[in-house]
Length: 127
Image (cartoon, rainbow, N blue to C red; front, side, top):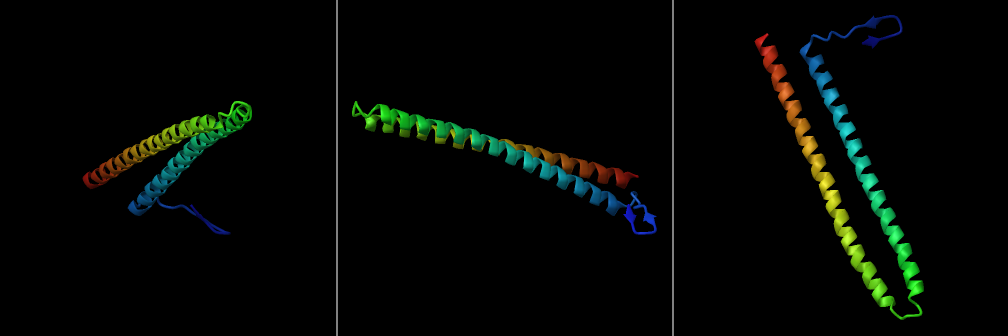
């Protein structure tokens, strides 16, 4: 609806250009929602990973302080590095899985949009 200070002008919804613009706007908003959901999911996963790593770093400091009398600091650091490498590889795998899932959802959404557009075009052609 278009409005100025004195009059309100309704937008005719039966025009093909208006219907196409509405579909485009709807698809754009849906895409933005999907992107925001993906960003939130990635941030949650990242914060969880960082929290675990910080806890392990605090544990490392405690283990290093406790190992001062036994002269096994090198073993403690070696174990920390080994676990850190495994954690980082696992986190990279998790991020790739999330990215793969998001790409699959985006492809599914695009297929649905294309199918709907083709069906609408066919219905308008027949009518």
